[in-house]
Image (cartoon, rainbow, N blue to C red; front, side, top):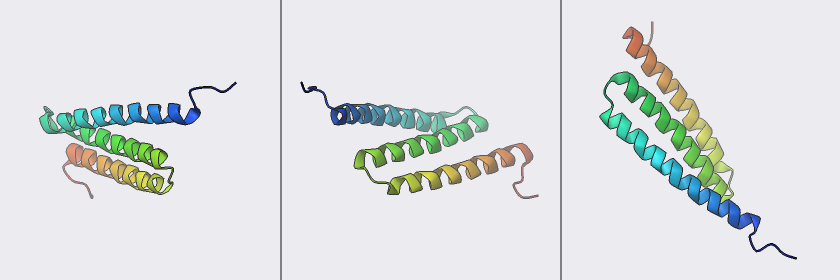
Length: 98
């Protein structure tokens, strides 16, 4: 007896829901970045945008079945981490390089 719901259709449905939720998270982070009350909130919103962009690239890679976007997601995560550390250091000390 065959199952009317295949694994491929469940994965496609889950990816569609995940795209929608990550897209909403991106919009909310962008709103916090633009409307944030102070600088630390904006830095955290920018960091959240990096994380959401990485998640979106991983989901897109899963959707296409291509491994190339995993490397791009890794590079964006690395650049996002370095950028967040540099902005936090600038915010606390006023200088990045001592």
